[in-house]
Amino acid sequence: MYMLKLSPAGKDYLWGGTRLKTEYHKKFDFSPLAETWECSVHPDGASTVLNGEHAGMTLDKIIARYPEYLGKKYDYFPILVKFIDAEKDLSIQVHPDDNYARFHENQNGKTEMWYVMDATENAFLIHGFEKNFTKQEVKQAIENHEIMKYLHKVPVQKGDVIYIPAGTVHAIGKGILIAEIQENSNITYRVYDYDRLDKNGNRRELHIEKALEVMHCAPAPEIIFDKNFFKNSDYEIETLCNCNYFKIKKIMIKKYFNFFVTTDSFQVLLCLDGISKIIHEQEIIKIKKGDCVFLPAGLGNCKIQGNAELLKIKC
Image (cartoon, rainbow, N blue to C red; front, side):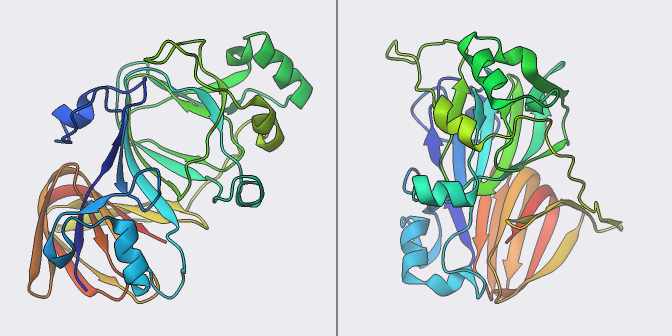
């Protein structure tokens, strides 16, 4: 058992940009680069191990061979970790909850959290509706191409956190760079896509009937997590999200940070900025901005040294 440094799968969705290549050193031949799936076992894009005896293997195959890496709490891989570069607006969309998704799609539902890594001036997100509407009102607004009038726009800046439970209508606006932690799912029901064309000259598929079945036609729920914050001369640590699916902390390393990976669950480290190294016994992994590391359950004592900003993800 050892720490697994990961290489992502990439996606060339039409709204993507170039920042994941130029600033986060993601090496893909295609353009645009919209998303990188940093820690994923999903069949639509599994990440690959870079180091050690498992180098070159995809993470899904490693987990299948060593299910104990997940920990005592899980018999399946529960999350997917991404970077997202929205050079253009994403479609207006919604995700189903677990019950609906497992019955209709044979997948998990999709609750997610966004951490805004950067945003241009006047950038905004779509997060729920401005007020309560009936599904018939929303359906008519979609058909009349007037849905944008009904949606709640949220201005964002670097460091903002947005929690999106399944059923919440949402979209990432142009000019925003995001780290996304979500359930292990790739189900998206598009509601509206601005009538734009893909690279083949076709409009992308909409999923209005299913979207109306799962969406909450109301303002996004106000969910406030306990923002525990601790600071000393060596590190700062802040809780960003603590929900049923994942617990996310932002760690600012000034010198070092010690932590423990229990036998209950694995952990994931996502480096947002800076340079550091992760130490476990005699093993050392160097990480920089954009890197992702999977820490198997039961790994035990670990230490991060350097000067970096990371997300520590636990399920």
